[in-house]
Length: 242
Ligand code: NAP
Image (cartoon, rainbow, N blue to C red; front, side, top):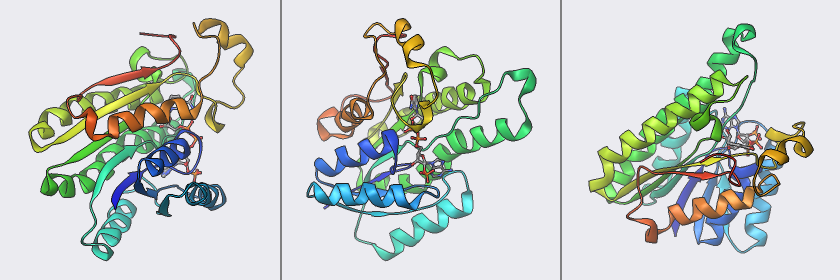
């Protein structure tokens, strides 16, 4: 059995990634924050498709929770090795800079950027010992291009992009690749309320993307065959920005 951890793996893009990795034969640790019902649905769907996994709730931006939950899992499963880590959990709390409150800045940085450090540092040890690993970070078009009303979110995602490239330099010789995918507008709860009719005019393929279209790319980067691709940021945005 091969093991994968998907943060925020219970809904939206993360759910599609969990299903994709399960279809590739991974036992998937599905992390989420609080919505146990949606997480349960994801696990059921994984099993209905012949895969397996378990739920692993914790706040990815909380150092103690990350350490407790991941070391508990590792202690209970000493012979098991997480070989794929997808840092996908994320939130947005948009506001123009002049109106942005401290909490909007700090929560977005904590959940999108601190989480990368806290979770990856914990999982990396096992990958180094086994001399194999795949780390895929879900960033955003906003981290590449910048987006008005999202200085917090753009900063966090740009930070993860920098960290992706730096970590790739550190661990390449140990058989570990580190890449990022940068979605544009994808149909999930996060983009509910956006005016697709207006926005799709800006997108060359004239539609929002599907979570499965991101998951497919993550599956590719997670596969052993992608072993010569590292430090890369793959845009998945229908041509909106390149
Ligand atoms: P979503 O539908 O809102 O789902 C978010 C997922 O992250 C849920 O599973 C949620 O768990 C989990 N989560 C949130 N905060 C967490 C925390 N502190 N600890 C652990 N889990 C947490 O979001 P999405 O649209 O699929 O986005 C997934 C990723 O893609 C994010 O990093 C986002 O920034 C990025 N992205 C999305 C788009 C887009 O258009 N949708 C575009 C570019 C980038 P609960 O269900 O328990 O809340």
